[in-house]
Image (cartoon, rainbow, N blue to C red; front, side):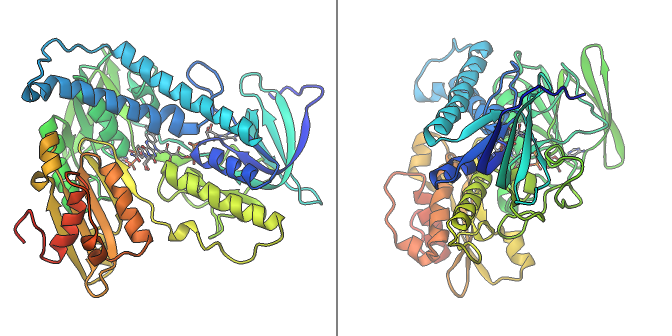
Length: 498
Ligand code: FAD
Ligand code: NAD
């Protein structure tokens, strides 16, 4: 039951952004920079029950996971690799409390940084759930903001343009309902205060592999139960096959084609029953993480009498301008589907801000040339080595019946990789046979997340593979492998047999 306060503050804006994740906060800042009077409404409460900007990415996603990935990698390297460098690390101990505190500190710094950016850019920030009501005769939408703790309306806002950036939440499985201590989602798995003896993870996607890597490096035995017969089907097959071997060698126990039957909490453990090849199996874990994808937060943002069209999986439908089926209401980021990535959400935010600003200035007609649909969005999985890719995989090129050529370069032939003790992985470039256009770049290597940006630049600037082969790369760098892969495509690699 919603309690109504006597007098609710009211304010009118050019744009109201709902959600302050990477889509929403970037959209709000750019709208304000473009001269639009902008509000951003966000309802996130952190585990201490405090409002915190930044959405999934900063609070329970990209940032805390990368903080723990970094710390856990340092720990594992200190234990396993330092001796080879002549560094005696026999007395390395884990202080998980301190590691978690460091992660919390990074999250706090970055989330508070957004509050400071809002202030500097004159974005008015409202804390609470925003619910959009149908437009009145003057095409103004009303947004009611309700405090989640007190359930009171704290503001009534109006605007002609709304940007819905409400993100996504973890998908749940009826066979593995979440509990306080034993069956967790990804946010819970980032909060563990003790290394579990045996950690089970349902789903071997980006989250499963990143979280699995963290806890395996810190000493847990990790078993991943993946429903599909192949690991990472969205990744180029050659890379995913190498990845499976490397992750298995690292100690991740990856069970493919595993159908979850049910779970049972027994003797402070989680018993998991699953089937592979028609055979039933049982495994007992100290903790179980459910990481089987995410669903859009498209429902709690519209009033009962009003809504926009969604597809069969509840993603908000948008046109190429990212406008929903209701004029003046745009949607961006995870809530519209496609790649559920922070940088994709942020770019969509910028695109919509430009469109709304141009409309306000009366200058905008037609489509945006920087349309996100045409944008190349790189993907990264932050395992070790990292996996990064942009453009088409080899299997997609085959599906599209393209005539292509491939250049490959293994990291073990790269001087810097050897000096770093990072010989695992390869760089693969796929290019159009006739034109030399780069169709896709696929990397498994240390720092692949950094190297892939070079491929994005090359592809966005329409460099051909010959252009890439003619450029000078500093020595010794991991990036030289990209250069060598381009050379290899022409049968001209220097450091491997062509
Ligand atoms: P979100 O970040 O989900 O933000 C939506 C915001 O809207 C939230 O604050 C929510 O509380 C708020 N909200 C929802 N409904 C309302 C309402 N009615 N009123 C007010 N506020 C509302 N992506 C990467 O690119 N790189 C990574 O390394 C990466 N790592 C990840 C690791 C994990 C463990 C997870 C879970 C995700 C990761 N992602 C990563 C994905 C990334 O976090 C999302 O793609 C990104 O956060 C989507 O941004 P968004 O702005 O669309 O939504
Ligand atoms: P995902 O779609 O990447 O992987 C989920 C995996 O779970 C899939 O392999 C799927 O086949 C499997 N699965 C589904 N149902 C299952 C079941 N019943 N039993 C066993 N396996 C099952 O989703 P995710 O890993 O949960 O991540 C969610 C989103 O967050 C992704 O779309 C991703 O883009 C984003 N994310 C990105 C990064 C990154 O950019 N580095 C990191 C983490 C998350």
